[in-house]
Image 1 (cartoon, one colour):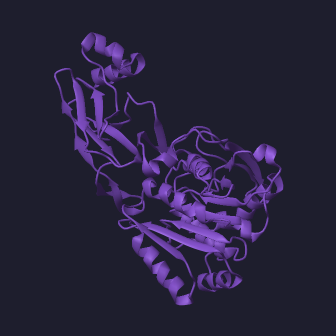
Image 2 (cartoon, one colour):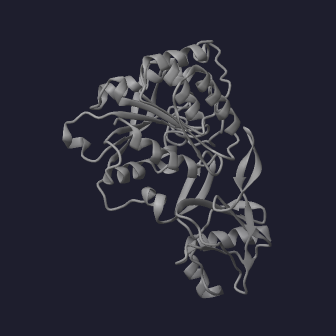
Image 3 (cartoon, one colour):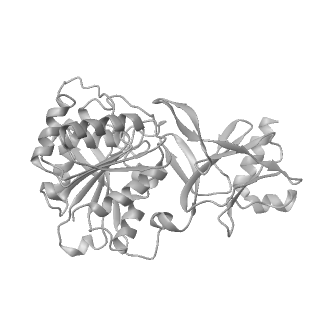
Length: 395
């Protein structure tokens, strides 16, 4: 039964649902987005015993993860019709970019009828967009577009050539102007691809620029895993399964060698090189890095963004980067800065540590902007945080 099911799925994928439907019945188009913004998911699997759909359009449930119990997507069953088609229709959904997958006989798979897929660490998910509102920032609209490049740079501190993703705004190539820089950092298990694919950073920047809500800026998205030269499959280690927490994660090595990235950018792009034109922000582990980079180099960044920051104890063998946090935060405060911004979801598993950190900032009198949203530790929040944070930069 299992062998026949796998062969059937392969046959559908290769020849398409319409060709299959000519022999066995109606084909499928999935996901099917209706006028009221409800969505029907379809899967043609006549020999499956059970099919569920899971995704971030559903209420969250508690799931186990390497970082403990966190919020994860729930699942709902699909119903089968006489043609072997399984389906589930949602209620009307709000405007957003959504991820989902099917669970067929206990096996999680992407939607074979949907060509659009994102990778989050080692997990593939199918995606779709409900347009309108915030989600229009994630779309490729008829506006001027920036350039996205995968840039290799030398890191003398790590003794390796490494790759970063760089967004330059529309007109950069011919303008001759200098630009400020936002260093935008990914979370644990991510890489230099994460903010582009999952965060829709280029689309957000293009659309905010077209709306006149942000100043033109360069966005630098490095790889925060110091043992990697590039994302899995893009570097000298070839194809391997991505890991959530790789060796030397959050041990101070990234922070100690971060200025290799800054120096390369300032030597190879037309950018301003003063503190007033540098910002650093990140999600989860990237928020941890942004916090510590901004205080370890306390007179380097005028703008700091912590998105659901993993404000946890770092394991620093050198005993340098994570020492004297109160003193270095005070030095950062006394040196002056333009914006210290924090965002967190109400059900985020890192909510308490963020509140504890706010108490520390309050104790030393360090001013900050705090934003609290619905939801947990999810990309739906981080895309919103970027769209709220970027308009405040370099004003």
